[in-house]
Amino acid sequence: MSPPGYIGGYADWGLVIGIFALLLAPLWIVKYPAILDFPNHLTRVAIARNIAKPGFGFAAYYRFSWHPTYLYFDLATYILSFIFGVFIAGKIALSLYILLLVAATRYLLKSIKAPLLPFIFWPALVTYNWWFWIGSINLLVGFCTGIFAIGFAWKNRETGFNRRFFIALLLLIIFSASCHPISALLTCAMIIPILFSFVTHKPVRRLLMGIFITLVIFIEILLHIHYHQPWEPLTNLERVRWMLHDFYAPASEARIMKVCLFAVFCIWCYYKKNTLKSYFMPILLLVLIMITPHSISISGDNDMRCAMFLFFLVPCIVPSPQSKSLRIVMSIIIIGCACYWNFLQMQKQQAAQNIYNEIEKIASILPPAPIIRPVLKFTGRAADEAPLFLTFYRGGFTPFLFASTLHGLKYLKRPDCPAIETWERVEMSCAGFYDYLILATYEPARPDESESELATMGFVRRFSGKYFNCYAKRAVLSQK
Image (spheres, rainbow, N blue to C red):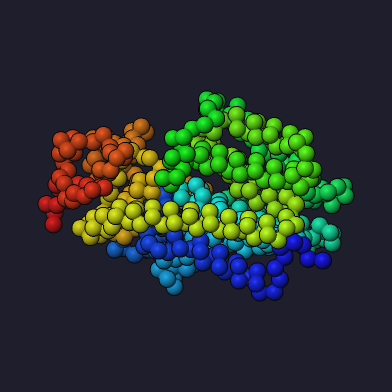
């Protein structure tokens, strides 16, 4: 017998394609997705593609090699760039994450025999989350792989586990780890109770409920002890305002997620036993999770990493609504929220295009292979890393690319600067290394450098804009 809300045949794939198309709109309606790390990732791929071409000058400053972690975005963009070019390939790699998330949700629902309505629309609520806008696409793709792994383990739980099953599960976990180690660890944490239920013959939903409650309550408490963050008041309207009007508000996003999870628990308790006593557990849970600190979302980020998994465990533990009308109403509410959220994202994306257009104008006046230094106060907004597109377009050197053993990119030359040098200032001893300085003029990212200080270092203004000013070294200009 099909569960309530079951949709068979090609209709469910029609829903998947429709949701995928809806979620792609904010990404493709503009030329430049306003994602913090997007120019950083694209520039790394451009270095990998063009390091042997002398016109870009990359070989003098970088060495690139493939590394088995944080692999998805760089590798997918690199392969696709041979057909579409690096920039479009990067946008396609972002789109594949959205497709994976929607397809993984469908597979999970089919595996646990949960209703497609309303849960097939679940991804629309969390696709454009805080992790997406800061550019942690590898983490999110690893998370999607984890959802596939949970569904795969659940689907094979009743038929038994054999060697082929464990090999396939191991490959999924390895792929998740190659995207991001944290996503692989969380995937294993979700799979263990499913395997345990097969051995002990205990209800898997009850075990997952225990995992769910334990993660929500204790993860933030343990992180609070680790990071020693101060407690915050229960209500913080300023952070809610950030959540509604800006891209980056992890604490508010975590708080809103918790309230949604509490509502789900209330629904679960209502179907289990419609008495006042049945609400004791969710009310106690709400009190516990709301008094835990939210500031760790900024310092540790780990509660947000778990929040996505917790969100997708909801269909695994919540009974299916029996009423067809209720399923339709819930689906309409979710779709309405998703459309409204996507509309906000499209507005913000459109507003951010002026920043990138200004970067294009600066790139047009730069020579090939320039040595560029962005100077700004890092705020976590997409504009902070926009100057990295200059290196993407013109080649040369910039000091703020992801370069570590884990990322595979290594600097061969760097200025001999004090360790305290940051994005905000350029030390006099370092100024001789750079040909161009890009100063942010937008608030609150205005740097501490002044025109007179830059003149002392030998720089003159070459471009003035609303968001950035470009300064060139006099010696470089005299060589033209």
